[in-house]
Image (cartoon, rainbow, N blue to C red):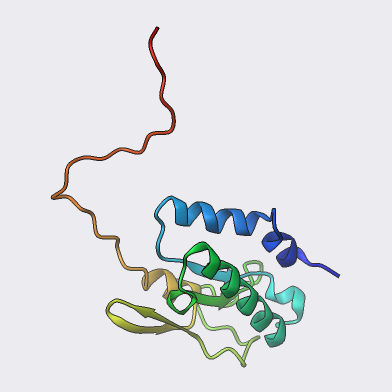
Length: 137
């Protein structure tokens, strides 16, 4: 059967749409939190399957999967959110490539802390995104 993950990354899925939207809007750093691990009985195989499929589709969008932290979590139980989870002893942590080198961590908080602040081109002229153009008659 298909689960929530498969629905999310299907052709018209919300996960796929959000990844494309984020990339289009200039978001260049991504964290993939694989939630609801408790519903898979903390399955390493299911996590690896999701990492593999997600890597394939975010690569098509324009992201480098090697620069993305993949973290198995359970938001409901708090696993791997702030502290390492005892329920997933197989999980050795995430690794991602950055401009500064290789960064490692275990939790979602570690992944958030590893996000690099974007460089703002404050020396350049002001630019604003336009959504629509209206003409006066």
